Length: 117
Image 1 (cartoon, rainbow, N blue to C red):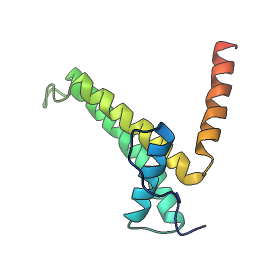
Image 2: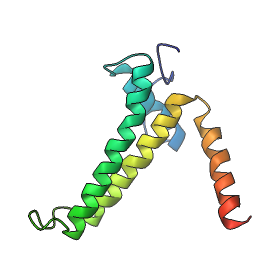
Image 3: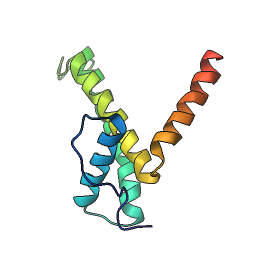
Image 4: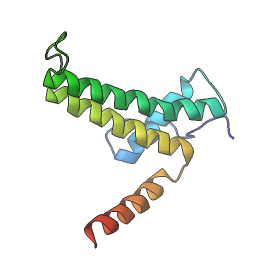
């Protein structure tokens, strides 16, 4: 395994989804506290943390905790879902420099399977 999980120079986010993902991977690589296989595992485990934050936001938006009441908005839920998507794409990019192609092929397969196209 190389020293850098996502070898790409940091760029300004927003130009393109995958350029932004590459830039985030580069930034995370430059600031990671763990190296080697642990860095990959921790980046993937971060996804579980983000999914938990979605659940917390949904509970808060619906006021399902009577002790806390309504603590979040549906905008908070949307934001947390975006965090999940970004974290998943960063984790995929960490595993392969071909993340764009891997994701596109998988999305095409899911679309064909689900929509019958």
